[in-house]
Length: 159
Image 1 (tube, one colour):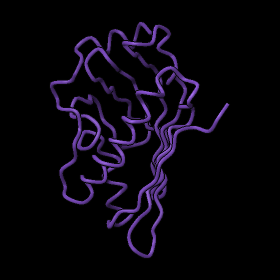
Image 2 (cartoon, rainbow, N blue to C red):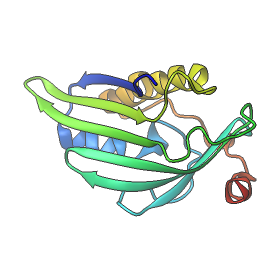
Image 3 (tube, rainbow, N blue to C red):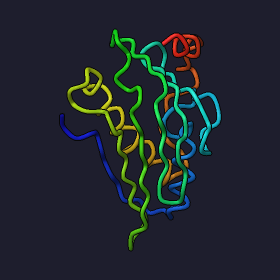
Image 4 (cartoon, rainbow, N blue to C red):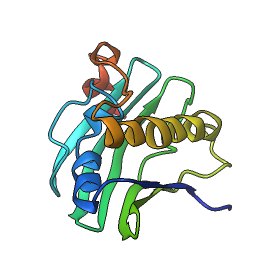
Protein backbone atom coordinates (compact mmCIF):
# COMPACT_ATOMS: atom_id res chain seq x y z
CA UNK A 1 0.00 0.00 0.00
CA UNK A 2 1.25 3.50 -0.80
CA UNK A 3 1.55 6.49 1.47
CA UNK A 4 -1.43 8.40 2.81
CA UNK A 5 -2.45 11.73 1.29
CA UNK A 6 -0.41 14.62 2.63
CA UNK A 7 0.19 18.23 1.69
CA UNK A 8 1.85 21.19 3.35
CA UNK A 9 1.93 24.95 3.12
CA UNK A 10 3.80 27.81 4.71
CA UNK A 11 1.62 30.74 5.75
CA UNK A 12 2.35 34.20 7.06
CA UNK A 13 0.54 33.55 10.36
CA UNK A 14 1.58 32.54 13.85
CA UNK A 15 1.24 28.94 15.01
CA UNK A 16 -1.53 30.10 17.39
CA UNK A 17 -3.45 31.62 14.46
CA UNK A 18 -3.06 28.42 12.44
CA UNK A 19 -4.22 26.33 15.40
CA UNK A 20 -7.31 28.52 15.84
CA UNK A 21 -8.14 28.26 12.15
CA UNK A 22 -7.77 24.47 12.05
CA UNK A 23 -10.08 24.17 15.08
CA UNK A 24 -12.78 26.09 13.14
CA UNK A 25 -13.44 23.90 10.06
CA UNK A 26 -16.76 25.70 9.43
CA UNK A 27 -14.69 28.65 8.22
CA UNK A 28 -12.71 26.72 5.61
CA UNK A 29 -14.27 23.23 5.07
CA UNK A 30 -18.03 23.50 5.48
CA UNK A 31 -20.48 25.87 7.13
CA UNK A 32 -22.79 22.84 7.33
CA UNK A 33 -20.75 21.14 10.09
CA UNK A 34 -22.85 20.39 13.16
CA UNK A 35 -21.44 19.97 16.65
CA UNK A 36 -18.41 21.30 18.50
CA UNK A 37 -15.05 21.00 16.70
CA UNK A 38 -12.41 22.65 18.86
CA UNK A 39 -11.53 20.45 21.83
CA UNK A 40 -10.40 16.88 22.40
CA UNK A 41 -13.43 14.63 22.76
CA UNK A 42 -15.71 16.83 20.63
CA UNK A 43 -17.78 14.92 18.06
CA UNK A 44 -19.25 16.53 14.98
CA UNK A 45 -20.79 15.77 11.60
CA UNK A 46 -19.70 17.02 8.20
CA UNK A 47 -22.05 16.65 5.25
CA UNK A 48 -22.04 17.77 1.66
CA UNK A 49 -25.46 16.78 0.43
CA UNK A 50 -25.90 13.06 -0.20
CA UNK A 51 -22.42 12.90 -1.75
CA UNK A 52 -20.49 12.73 1.54
CA UNK A 53 -21.14 12.66 5.26
CA UNK A 54 -18.88 11.69 8.13
CA UNK A 55 -18.83 11.74 11.91
CA UNK A 56 -15.55 12.91 13.44
CA UNK A 57 -14.10 12.97 16.92
CA UNK A 58 -11.36 15.39 17.90
CA UNK A 59 -8.72 13.06 19.33
CA UNK A 60 -5.94 15.52 20.10
CA UNK A 61 -5.41 19.28 20.31
CA UNK A 62 -2.09 20.90 21.19
CA UNK A 63 -0.18 23.92 19.88
CA UNK A 64 1.72 21.56 17.54
CA UNK A 65 -1.02 19.16 16.40
CA UNK A 66 -4.72 18.63 15.85
CA UNK A 67 -5.98 15.13 15.10
CA UNK A 68 -9.45 13.94 14.13
CA UNK A 69 -10.66 10.32 13.98
CA UNK A 70 -13.32 9.34 11.44
CA UNK A 71 -15.95 7.34 13.35
CA UNK A 72 -18.50 6.84 10.55
CA UNK A 73 -18.63 7.68 6.88
CA UNK A 74 -20.98 7.67 3.90
CA UNK A 75 -20.16 8.29 0.27
CA UNK A 76 -22.96 8.48 -2.27
CA UNK A 77 -20.69 6.78 -4.82
CA UNK A 78 -19.16 4.07 -2.60
CA UNK A 79 -21.40 1.14 -1.75
CA UNK A 80 -19.25 0.13 1.23
CA UNK A 81 -18.81 3.67 2.55
CA UNK A 82 -16.12 2.45 4.90
CA UNK A 83 -12.99 3.83 3.25
CA UNK A 84 -12.65 6.71 5.70
CA UNK A 85 -13.74 4.85 8.84
CA UNK A 86 -10.83 4.62 11.27
CA UNK A 87 -8.66 7.02 9.28
CA UNK A 88 -7.09 10.01 10.98
CA UNK A 89 -6.91 13.58 9.77
CA UNK A 90 -3.82 15.24 11.19
CA UNK A 91 -2.67 18.85 11.16
CA UNK A 92 0.95 19.34 12.26
CA UNK A 93 1.84 22.95 13.04
CA UNK A 94 5.42 24.25 13.27
CA UNK A 95 6.89 27.76 13.39
CA UNK A 96 9.34 28.81 10.69
CA UNK A 97 11.46 31.91 10.19
CA UNK A 98 8.78 33.40 7.93
CA UNK A 99 5.50 32.17 9.45
CA UNK A 100 4.15 28.71 10.11
CA UNK A 101 4.29 25.48 8.19
CA UNK A 102 1.12 23.39 8.30
CA UNK A 103 1.40 19.77 7.27
CA UNK A 104 -1.93 18.10 6.59
CA UNK A 105 -2.13 14.31 6.43
CA UNK A 106 -5.20 12.16 5.95
CA UNK A 107 -3.65 8.99 7.38
CA UNK A 108 -5.31 6.04 5.69
CA UNK A 109 -6.49 7.89 2.58
CA UNK A 110 -4.49 6.10 -0.10
CA UNK A 111 -4.64 5.93 -3.91
CA UNK A 112 -6.05 2.41 -3.74
CA UNK A 113 -9.31 3.78 -2.27
CA UNK A 114 -12.22 4.36 -4.62
CA UNK A 115 -12.70 7.84 -3.12
CA UNK A 116 -9.09 8.96 -3.65
CA UNK A 117 -9.75 10.51 -7.08
CA UNK A 118 -12.43 12.72 -5.48
CA UNK A 119 -10.86 13.25 -2.04
CA UNK A 120 -7.35 14.23 -3.17
CA UNK A 121 -8.47 17.29 -5.18
CA UNK A 122 -11.06 18.14 -2.53
CA UNK A 123 -8.49 18.17 0.31
CA UNK A 124 -6.09 20.07 -1.96
CA UNK A 125 -8.77 22.75 -2.37
CA UNK A 126 -9.86 22.89 1.28
CA UNK A 127 -6.30 23.04 2.64
CA UNK A 128 -4.33 24.73 -0.15
CA UNK A 129 -6.99 27.24 -1.17
CA UNK A 130 -9.71 27.66 1.44
CA UNK A 131 -7.70 27.31 4.66
CA UNK A 132 -4.81 29.31 3.16
CA UNK A 133 -7.20 32.09 2.13
CA UNK A 134 -8.90 32.02 5.55
CA UNK A 135 -5.54 32.50 7.25
CA UNK A 136 -4.55 35.31 4.87
CA UNK A 137 -7.84 37.24 4.72
CA UNK A 138 -10.17 35.90 7.41
CA UNK A 139 -12.51 34.54 4.73
CA UNK A 140 -12.25 30.94 3.51
CA UNK A 141 -14.06 29.13 0.71
CA UNK A 142 -16.03 26.45 2.59
CA UNK A 143 -19.13 24.60 1.42
CA UNK A 144 -22.11 26.73 2.37
CA UNK A 145 -24.62 25.84 5.07
CA UNK A 146 -27.09 24.81 2.36
CA UNK A 147 -24.93 21.75 1.64
CA UNK A 148 -26.09 20.13 4.91
CA UNK A 149 -27.80 16.77 4.49
CA UNK A 150 -30.67 16.48 6.98
CA UNK A 151 -30.44 12.65 6.99
CA UNK A 152 -26.69 12.56 7.71
CA UNK A 153 -27.05 11.71 11.42
CA UNK A 154 -29.48 8.87 10.70
CA UNK A 155 -27.41 7.43 7.84
CA UNK A 156 -24.16 7.61 9.84
CA UNK A 157 -25.79 5.98 12.88
CA UNK A 158 -27.03 3.11 10.71
CA UNK A 159 -23.68 2.85 8.98
